[in-house]
Image (cartoon, rainbow, N blue to C red; front, top):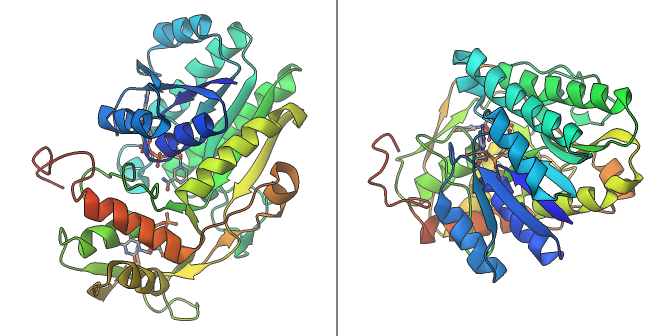
Length: 344
Ligand code: NAD
Ligand code: UDP
């Protein structure tokens, strides 16, 4: 399939583009590099052994999006592009609603107009919010608790309404749990700008000496060791989940949601220990107050993806830590040199 991958230069997109090529598909990247670097595309091309087609464009530019879809001869779209920082979304809600929702509307308008009706969307486990249970199944009601999560929830609803409005749409909504790790080559990986919000990139930067210590946000949760529990998923497994979803879209009438997670929770301290094993050095940490809005524990029920996508995770926490460390130690400043961003 010829697949338009919006946000394909980003963390999950770049790994998925590679997996698409490996599965015999033809990805085309659309990205405005708002949170990524052309260097990622160059490296994916190098790993793929061929030049990946790249269109530099902003999804907020509706006429440009229309032209790209009109001319692209695409069989399907994987829609990764969007802003994703929870804290920033609370400070700048309008920017988040505009970026994530308007850009999706532009894309869907163009797809509808030009007859492209297969789409896989990057949603998130954050759409479930406080669900009253720790293991999330797809039937739980959506209850996102911050503006970022609400953009994902609203886009899911827009996709459902679109699918209900006319026949012929095949829509997969992938609810990712906590993507971490990197390609085992160490050539592509996560390259957050500024101070990382997420645990694994923060731990990686402590290990490589860019930060002094990790703040563990709370050790008094009702979990086995008191620290927060999440379902970490290796980004290469996640990339494979996109290929599986794309290939299963033909069987979907309308829209369908799938959890992509391992089904297993790990605590903050378990992540720290795995990273210490991988890096062969201690990760200094201090216990800090709980972070606002954090839930104590949640993880996926990945049964539906196993049954319908014939997909499951294959890599464990030690693989995630090893590959994250391999990427971080080979690229201490990600795709940059450390000069670009004084904040970082
Ligand atoms: P990322 O920031 O690395 O990738 C997003 C890409 O989209 C970037 O390359 C960025 O430049 C591009 N982009 C943003 N706005 C754009 C626009 N208007 N036009 C064109 N390109 C634009 O993020 P990621 O971690 O790879 O996440 C990919 C998707 O998965 C996002 O939608 C994110 O919300 C979702 N998601 C991520 C996580 C996670 O923990 N990483 C978890 C759940 C869901
Ligand atoms: N966490 C932490 N210190 C950090 C970042 C995260 O202790 O610097 C904890 C956080 O409280 C949560 C877990 O690590 O329990 C995963 O957090 P992350 O932000 O990576 O994912 P999310 O909370 O979005 O699931």
